[in-house]
View (tube, rainbow, N blue to C red):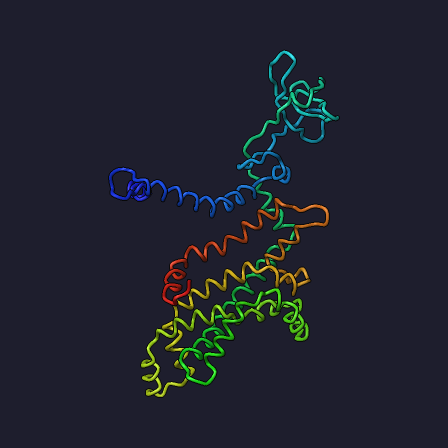
Length: 350
């Protein structure tokens, strides 16, 4: 604890507070607030009820209005703190509201009702976490099927992406042939083409191949990425060619050189591409929304769209399931983040 506190209050010269120390901490605090503030707000909002989400002014914590069972009434009634004509305050339940007047009843004396103006009553609220936001979608919607489809798409697509991109990078980095530079420039040039431009032709190709409403239609179109080819090629250029020449002198085939020499030596860069691919595939929404139209093949991101109706959006379910979808990618990033910095630094990407 002391070491943590000493680290968080570290100063420039170890003695007094320098203006640059204050500016640095303010800058860092703003950065933390901007990065994690929306995530924390999302987490807290996922525990609010539908009514709690639309209240104004909004509250950070999930408060809900207390309710009480009153004798003679079938359903629980909302509880308010009522200011009486003599200035005293008393908790009472609201029977009904007509315009600016509410009919209130004392839970201890249910046979007596009084009329109270709207501004003379204040809702009694308490901290309450709406856990049903997480439980109900799992029961009413095909959420586990969406989760399984997302796992299949992410796993298979990442594996194919690593194989395709690493083989392309191997050829572009270790083989001398005419047009190698042109092919590399062409691949990198595709980064300047917006993804929305190629969606229509890719969809037509997927239709002709019968991949509509198939998970393969989500997996295969994005298997080869120019970013992955460039990242792996830059890293493979650092592998000495003498190692490949020595392997050929030992009668190793080109596949053995790729699989048993290049791939193990390129693991840091492959790990970086794997992390990027997992994040891309897990969070992909637009292309699966286009290629998948049947409910049973929806991925998680597309399945969240099912909570949106024609007249009403079930935001409390959307927020709760959004938190659930964030958990796997957060764990992957938390455990493998060191590979991102080391891998990007070694490949020269910025």
